[in-house]
Amino acid sequence: MKNAKGGYNWSATAQLTKNFSNGIGLMAAYTRTDQRNFGDGAGDQLLNLWSIPQTSSNPNVPTLSYSSNLNPDRVIASVSFKKEYFKNLATSISLFYEGSQQGRFSYTYSADFNRDGQTNDLIYIPRDPSEITFVNIPAGGGNTGYARPYSAQEQSDIFFAYIEQDKYLREHKGQYATRNGATSPWRNQVDFRLTQEVFKNVGSSKNSIQFSVDIFNVGNMLNKDWGNLNFVNRANILVPQNVSSINGVTKPTFKLNNANGDIVRETFGTSQTISSTFYMQFGLRYNFN
Image 1: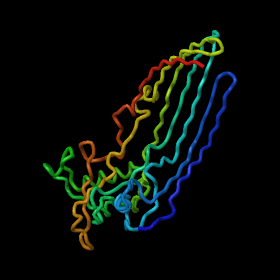
Image 2 (image 1 turned 90 degrees about the vertical axis):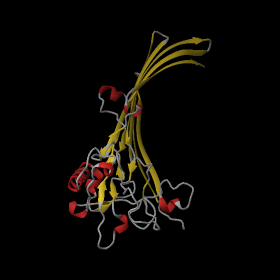
Image 3 (image 1 turned 30 degrees about the horizontal axis):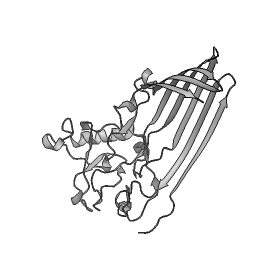
Image 4 (image 1 turned 180 degrees about the vertical axis):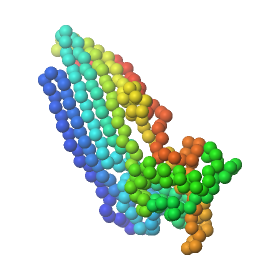
């Protein structure tokens, strides 16, 4: 073991803010970030620096690549308005927007493809069907997790259709995948807040009762396809079948992995949780100074 140099992290933000005399406030900011390291999720064991980081080469030679925590682009913006009237009433309305990628991930084999005892091998992305051989997924116990049997040809057709719908795979045919090289989709979220305040001066102090309504992910209330949180259906997309037999003569064979009860066909699914829906929050607050 020895130290490796070259990892880094940087972040740059540009922001514009303007508050107007009529109670309107505007803000917009963009953040660009890059973070590279030699090993993600390595924990506190030295062995993990060798066994966990995904690689397509010799794990004894650490490779600089993207951090799994990296979201390269992030945009936030807000618009707000506050109006006081009748001497003791104030109404505030605001919208807050956040847009960013949802994370990074690695395409790996689902088994120890290079036979070093670790399941951390990045896939080779074939240029065309001549560079990969599939085997049949039979009926019965051999197709657990699949809706039906699939022939080798069907899997090949599905796999290359999968590559075409995936921006990262489509742009890196004929190459090995890089660690955390793939990026999850851009997600937009808009939150709405309405605050009604009743205030009165008591002596030299301002006392107020504040009622608030928050609607989070309000875009999803307008369209069920907006503001959804995505997840990767299957990052270990290829299942090697004959690892122990691979040599200079015998070529590797594969099955296409399954996801959500059938063969995997798309990179991303939609999380069926509160993270993909709009929801509301009501508040009551008493303020005194």
